[in-house]
Structure formats: C-alpha cells, structure tokens
Image (cartoon, rainbow, N blue to C red; front, side, top):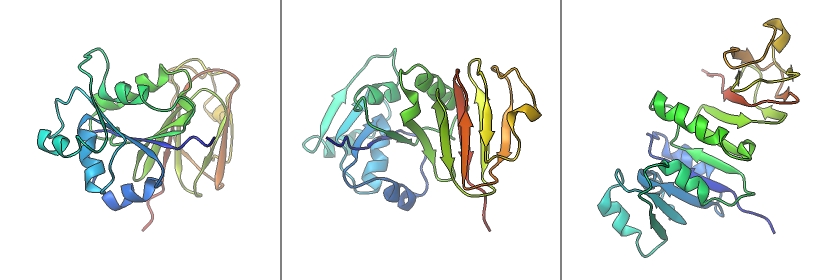
Length: 212
C-alpha cells in the first residue's frame, strides 16, 4: 500500500497561493492546524482534518467545512496546534508543513524543538517559497542548483560530519560539531549535496539562490 503524502497547513502568512497550490498533490492528505484552514480555502482544497483549539481560526469559515471533513476541537494547552496536527499524520508518510516558518522567531524555534522531539523527524520538511528546513538524524542528500545556500546547525553533538557538493567542507571551520557550531551560508557547487554523519541531530536549511 502506498501511503499518501501528508500536508500540514499552519497559520503563518503565505503570500503566494499559486505556489502553494502547485506543491500539493491531488491525493495528499491535508491537515489544517487551526487558522491554517484559510490557506486550504484560498486554494480551493477541502482538508481531510481541521484540528486545534480554534482560538485563531475564523469561526464563520470553520462552519463552512463542518459537513465536509473531520473537525477536531482539541483544547489541550500543553500542545501546540502543530503538535496536534502531527499526531494525526500517518506514522510512515512524508510530511510537508507550510505556514510554519518565517513569521515569528519564537514560533520558528518552537517548531524546531517539536520536530526534534519526534521519533523520526527526517521525514518532515518545513517549507516556504524560497527555503526548506529539516531536522535530520541521519545522512541525507539535498537536490537543488549550483549557487543555492545550505546551512548546517548541530542541535546536539554530531560525530564524523562530512559533506560533498558544498563549497566549504566542515573541517574548514573544524570541530567539535556541537550546538553553537555555525555552518551558515555554505554554497552548493553541484546539483546534489550530501550531508553525512554517524551520530547527532542537525537543523538543515536549504535556500534557493535569488535569480534575477
């Protein structure tokens, strides 16, 4: 059985709805976290699930979907709306999250910590039009274009860190690769970059080169 991709829509601003519509496969499972519903509405997609404490969603808009999908009012104040949405995702699906980065720094860092606490964060990507961010716990590849920027930020002690396809290998800065080691603004010199390590947790960012 092929598990469909899961899309989670959160409440931060998304300005380019044509871009968003193009990112979502027709058979994706869509979960709206509270006011993320407005993004699904803007691209004319009916979500499978709407979940949250509903402190920020437009109640009139929410009422329009009561007979079209599962609506789960979860008032647990010890979990964020994103945490509630993640708990409803298929355990073995890939997950793309939109509307979760770039608006407020406290929300951004909260979301990193949420992903870091999960058993398998590698399958989850935080997406915006020009950037993706991931929490990785095992080697991975990045597919992009020459000139794109990659950031490598250890969130725990990282062992045996090496890269391929990036302008500056980690040993240029030297170790140890612990929290606070700054791997910002590395540049892709190939269409694929490889990040390898034997142990640890990394915040990995990939920013598209601005093309004029």
